[in-house]
Length: 211
Image (cartoon, rainbow, N blue to C red; front, top):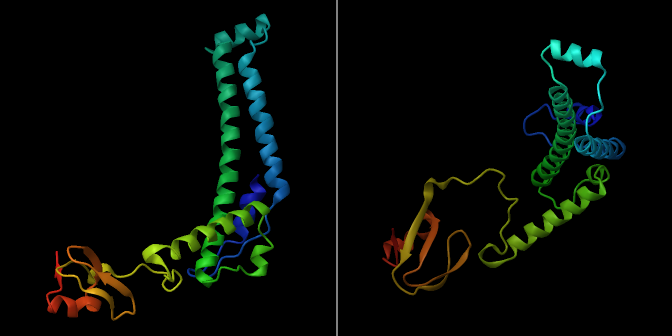
C-alpha cells in the first residue's frame, strides 16, 4: 500500500506551474490492497457474529486485575482492525484522486483533448474510461445553448469580474454583434450580464439600462 503513495511522491512536481508527470498505474499493488481490504472486512464481520472463545482462568484473572474485561479487549482489537481497513481504503482513494487531478491538470495546461502518449499509456483502463466521459461532458457543455463555441482553454485563470455589469433591455433591439465578436439577441425587459466595455454604446443609446 505504501508503494502507491511513494510512487506519487517520487514523481511530484517541484516547480509551480510545471506540467505534472503520471507514473504507470500500479495495478498489482492496487488490486492486492483491495483484496486485503475485502478479506479483512469479511473477517471483521465474522468475528462480530461469533461469541468470544472462553478464556483461561489465569488470563481472565490477569485481565481483571489490570482493569480490562474480555469485552473491552475484544472491542479494542476490533477497533484496531477497523482502523487498519480504513487507512488502506483511504490510501487507495488518495492514490486515485491524485492521479485524476494530475490528468485534469495536464489536459487544461496543454489545452489539448488528446493526452501525450507517455500519459495515456500510463493510465489504467478505468482512468481512460473516466477521461473519455470527462471529455464527453465538456463537449456537451460547450456545444449546447449559449455556451456553444465557447473555448474553455483560452484562459486558465478566472476572468476579472470588476468590469461585469448587469443590464435590463428597454426595447427589442434584435440580434446584434458585440465588440467582442459575440452575437446576442437583445429582447425587451430581459436581464443580461456583460462586460461593460462591449455594451457601452447600447447603454448610451438608452437601449440597455444598468440594474
